[in-house]
Amino acid sequence: MQANNAYIFPGFGLGLVMSGAIRVHDDMLLAASEALANQVTEESYKKGMTYPPFTDIRKISANIAANVAAKAYELGLATHLPRPENLVKYAESCMYTPLYRNYR
Image 1 (tube, rainbow, N blue to C red):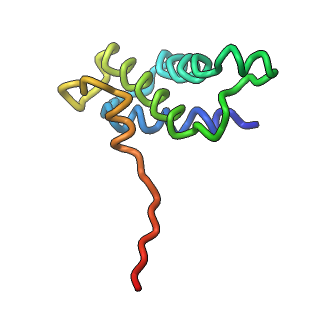
Image 2: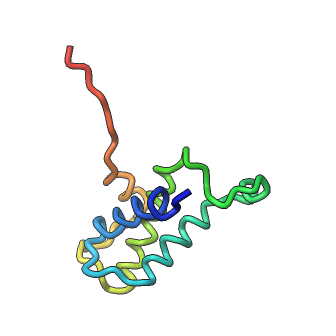
């Protein structure tokens, strides 16, 4: 499993965009990694899983984005002001949702 491509970067990129970060700081990568690790439940660990279930990828990405954006605001690197009150909900609202419409 490529954790960086499948799990980290979608949320990482979203966190940068939604905060308007002017620079990427090492602490943002750490924040993304911590957000991913925090979403692995004790039950999952007992099953031998080191990553949260991929079926939850949208929730996972929203939480990673929120952590990255929070770190950007904390470090003074965010330009989208004021900071949204709920970063997870804001991340979810920024996500693309593929819908197929019937045209006939």
